[in-house]
Image (cartoon, rainbow over all chains, first blue to last red):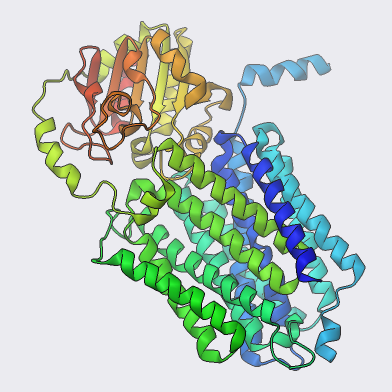
Length: 105
Length: 473
């Protein structure tokens, strides 16, 4: 892709990020950090390309890629799992939760 | 020429990466309320699945090894995530940041050694594209800073390294020199893609990341951890530029701006400029001298029994937790106390200062862990006007965030910082380990010596547990 078109996507994404993140409730700032951590491991895409490039590439480059895949995977699985664990703990008052259930009957 | 052909990504794959990017946006969007947050997290996982699946499908070489690597890494990550204590969340996040940083460095090195695989080789000269060299240089530099910085943050947060700022003489000059050196080398890298340039950039960046975080004290960690969060995003974005990958660029921008906004919120909540936090050294030895003068003033000490009696007869109690609650793991006992008070007909609310704890939202997670419903937990601006009408402000393990000097004393180092108005409550119950220690900022808190304050001097958890026992009688 041309540099400028990539750059346009980048700038737009910064603005999207800005507005989306301001709408995150402060109570969820820790899960926000955990989940951003998990999604920034999308760097795994680069690592996968590096480690799968066997043809014509150097062996070192391939192994560096593989190590990067391991590190990024720790982050992906760890990050999403810990976020899920945290989010599952956020509960409303039990009374309120019971009302919609009763209304459904 | 074969390499150049490999760089052309098919249209379906570009779309798939775009969808992954959109799903990542939705995953953050979900966090706007606890109710939609779990769905958001699922979007994130699906997005990651699509990104990984697409890449695997496009480059199908060496699959068993790669699957092995994912299984090993994923297993370790999942195990850690399931077993980590909630109070250890700050160091976990710092540790995870370091992994993203290191992965970025490794990918950068790999791309430098084998540029053909990444499709960044100029067909005419056979060298790496000029633009790609800048992207690679910056990506590796940011990745390395993220790595070494996060490792130090991890060591400090987990207590493996003292939380006090470590000051090197002339560190500002050294850091600025290093930074200029790195930027200069990245510029030079465009003209000359020799190995020494690339490796020097990498090495210098590791060093500066280390030097940047070393002088920053424990309570500035909310800013540091948010900043490193931001860096890990920019590192991913830089690599996304190198690869022309939409998913990576969108994610990098999202994470980068997320971390930047969190750093901004944290700085604002401490009324400090980002530069002064990064310059480091706040609240070091200077506080010790003020400490001596502080201890001599008269204060009123109370027992758990007194506290239980006062709260039982109150109509409303606002609980103000701080880092001390996390340290002594008092959140479960605290929730139990809250439940017993509610049974007595007392209204119980929790007030959270944005920088309470060691990372943004730290207190909220701990309270959620202890099953405190999130609609009883309020942010500073939503609850601060309630203190004047409440009977008891129950401060547990917080100090600087309740200090009225921030509003009145222009000479105070924390002047201008937004604080919780606990002193306006009819009675203030203040749990503190001892009268000797002052808060992180090294400032005395006049709330200790007010007539309507009762100091409860003990370990937070033990004190709350004893109060619970007394409430039971």
